[in-house]
Amino acid sequence: MGNPLRVLDSKNPDMQELIRGAPQLIEYLDTESRAHFETLCDILRAVGVAYEINPRLVRGLDYYNRTVFEWVTAATGAQNAVCSGGRYDGLIAQLGGDATPAVGFAMGVERLVALLVAGGRTPPGAQADVYVVVGGPQAVTPALALTERLRSERPAMRFELNIGGGNLKTQFRRADRSGAVLALIIGEDEIARGVVGLKPLRDTSGQSECPIAQLPAGLDAALAAARAAVAMP
Image 1: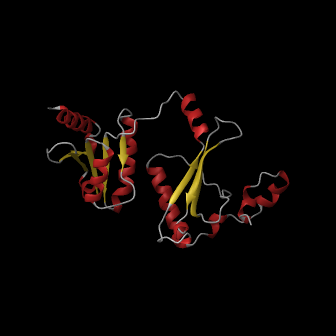
Image 2: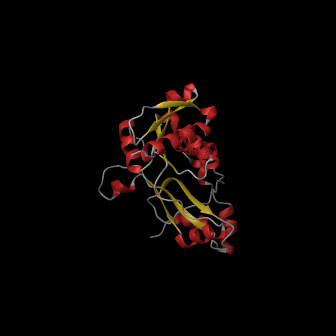
Image 3: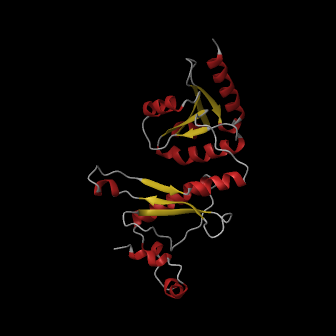
């Protein structure tokens, strides 16, 4: 049996009046789900991701929960969905595994390649220049916003942002595996003091700090120094 909520996504013209009169799912969120959704929207606004809330957006499978999403474009005509997905926090447990919060998506590779070609863009290299270490839950949103700002201001640099939590030791192991030569450390203490930490990953020089107001120039200097240290015989 299919998902009955798919009726909300029907393109049948005879169904549109019925759909317009149907209750909107967002009006029936419990307190926890509403708080989760509002936090997600706050993060999207903080990093400058434009979005529209579509109260009729549903997925065809029953295991999705909380938020589902689509990335659409006007550049590909009627086939406008490039990426679709959502959360499925209960799926792993349903399959016999441990309860594991999860989110995923499916992407139309051909459509994505066509958009890259049309925009004159080529995919970036796989190895990061800077790995962003996030210290504490209150630093997550500022770290996202600052990383997106740096990506815009220094498009030639490749930033990899830690996702999925982990203590500092775990995050520095991930930073080492990323191939980056420099770690940018954004923690709750650093945010409170208006600074970020800068730590070379390929030599033994120590960690320094840079005022957020002086980024990205301070990052340029730290990255150049870290690369020079790597290049030394």
